[in-house]
Image 1: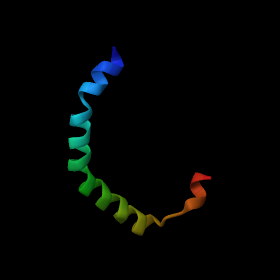
Image 2: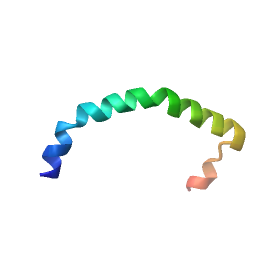
Image 3: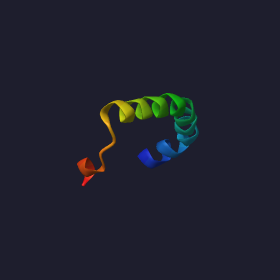
Image 4: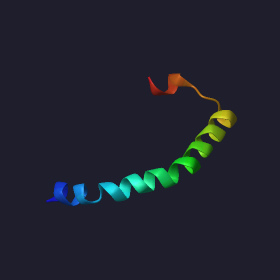
Length: 43
């Protein structure tokens, strides 16, 4: 049941991803420049 409902809303999720991408990318780059990008945190 959940898989069927989820497959019906794939288009909505993709539209929201496209709308939110510029904002999320800008915030991510700003935080990387302020806080620094450290790969060691994720090991």
